[in-house]
Image (cartoon, rainbow, N blue to C red; front, side, top):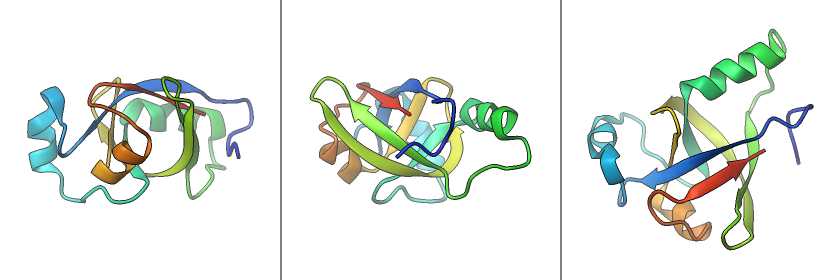
Length: 109
């Protein structure tokens, strides 16, 4: 399932509430909790999508994600676009399901 023609792809470092790494302050300010497979992405991803789709942005926005270290794959939806540049925030359960440690890379498509 690739919601975006032209294969938009990128890689980000992952963190969660339990494993915030250098982003602990960001998690303490979050208003909406991360649950399930909904994630927080950097605003540059939204900007890239807006440029690509202009007035026809798909909704909901879904991504195919892959932990290449363990060949683990899944899909996720976007909760918001407030994560720092190069980082995505996941729920603790999604981090565990994807076999990710704080700071590991996750590929998006």
